[in-house]
Amino acid sequence: MSRSIKPDRTTWRHYFGGFTMLALMVQLLTGIFLALYYEPSLKGAYRSVQYITNEVTGGSLLRNLHRWIAFVIFLAVFIHTVRTTLRKDFLNPEKRVLWLTGVVVMLPIFVALVTGLILPWEWKGYWLMEMVPNYFGALPLVGDGLKRFFLESFTLPRYEVLHILVLPLITFILLDYHFITRLRRRGIFRYMARHLIASSPLWVGLVVLSIYITIPSQDPEMIPMPLEGQFIPAPEWWALLILLPFMYLEGILVPALSFLLPLVVWTVAALLPCLLARKEVGTEEEREPHHATPHHRARGVKLLWHRLWRGGRITKIARAVVVTVIFLVFFSLVYLGSYNSPTLGCNSCHNLNNGFRMGMPPEDFKDRTKLPYLDDNEWMMGHWFYPQEIY
Image (tube, rainbow, N blue to C red; front, side, top):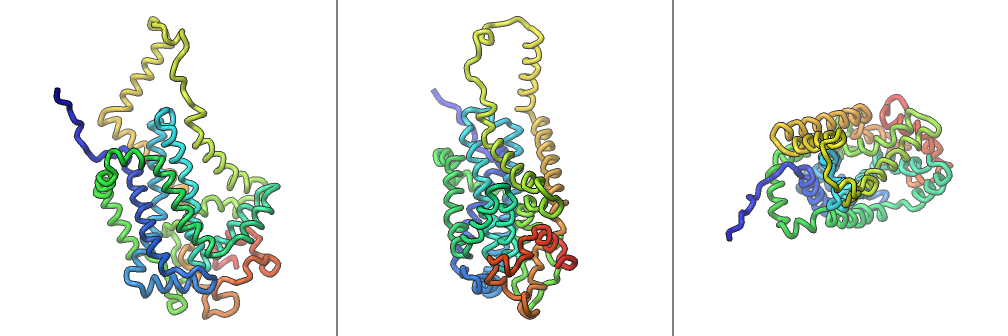
């Protein structure tokens, strides 16, 4: 007897999940290229970044592509998360591991973003490194110990190993549990090729952005303007989200909104399959046939709505509209919080030609007694957003 074979086709069901996987692979490849030329030392790090950008063939394109992908990955992950949430994948017992690993993998990706911002060790990377200990230092009880740990343990070689080896290894192990194992049986290369073709407009856009909106790395020969990079989306925006309370709030609200709230949301999201687990076998009363009681009529309406939501072109369009609206609201909030940050212009003032405290980041940056203003989180955040007013 002949068996019908379901035709293979590209589906939008996991479009942004597939794009994220492709983006992580490109990040890995471009990161390997950058690591070949990068020098993890306080005096040599930014000099090696300048060499990559200005002298190595293709270096500027690959470095800026690495930067733009880092920004776009979080948007793709957000859309993918919203779509899977609307599908209620967390209620499917067969997808519990997929859901858990999908939520957990967000953490090493975010830490990779932060460490990647620090590694160039120009003034922007130095500022972010100073804010990491301050961020954990705001926690009650354990804050001082964590702050001291991050200050004392920081070196560029350690962060390079963390960024290019440890975090990618953790990320791809989680992704293997998330969906790569299943793809091996179905044909991972065919799956990735289909998603590469389907996402080709996004890749063309990323290449164009990498060519025309670049990180200035010619200084001190070509000094950028103080607010250059203002309004331009950048990976720093995601780190700035959790740091914004330091500028606008005081007291317990700062750790509550900046640290505890994101941690609680992330933990609850990861544990949703366990918190909302359904019993596979109902009670005897539920298994017995019943007449059309109001309870069962309501249940029938719910099942009808579920079937309508699951199938049909109109419902697919409606679902896409819902995802788009949620995405626009989310990105609007991100934009309103971070749009005016001058992400490219730090070296316009902190420039070797401008004398004392204006060259490379200070070597005694860990000594808060010599640089007491580094402990002032409000000043640090204000100087980031308003460098010409707060200095």
